[in-house]
Length: 252
Image (cartoon, rainbow, N blue to C red; front, side, top):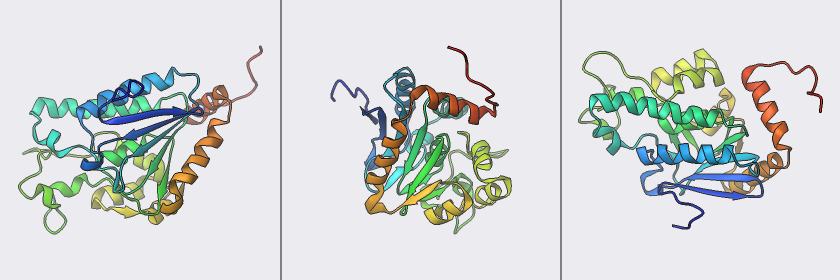
């Protein structure tokens, strides 16, 4: 792998003040692994310290998915202790992205489900291709037929014998913040997978671009944001995120 991208499961390319961050396991629908989490944390530190980066665009490689969530192979092998720690790892990793100084745009095509949608929700906003399918589907993994997916027909590894299980990487906090509690509850209770148009109506995504124009229009959006002053982007992000007032500029 080239020295400029020393990562196994993600690709980082910095061009013209844009950090293009691509989940790169298309054969696994870009499902997340411990390696991916470690690499994302390294990248977030790297781009946050890079004064030449003004915006991060988060994408998924391949035609089928932005991200299908947690890799099932990872989930099946976890001990009870490791299961607790993987939840903390995901939440800490996504929180790092949420707190980046510069804007982060999630460019979602294909499937963005479970932990994949939780990752997108940690971005400042989401732009979707018209072929996107999104949902926090975790509740269906231990549901009765016909709502239970085939991959957990023999049992949901995340469902404890006693007590409940819920999305663990920040989705139960960020989804209601994005679309309101009642709408979030509907999606979380049903585990529904919705299309891009409904996601737009709910306010889950900011805009929907046709699939054949998606790359071009995402590039145009990134170019426009990257043209702004990095310090102004950082300041505005902080003001909006934390609800600060801005009365007058600092003297200089």
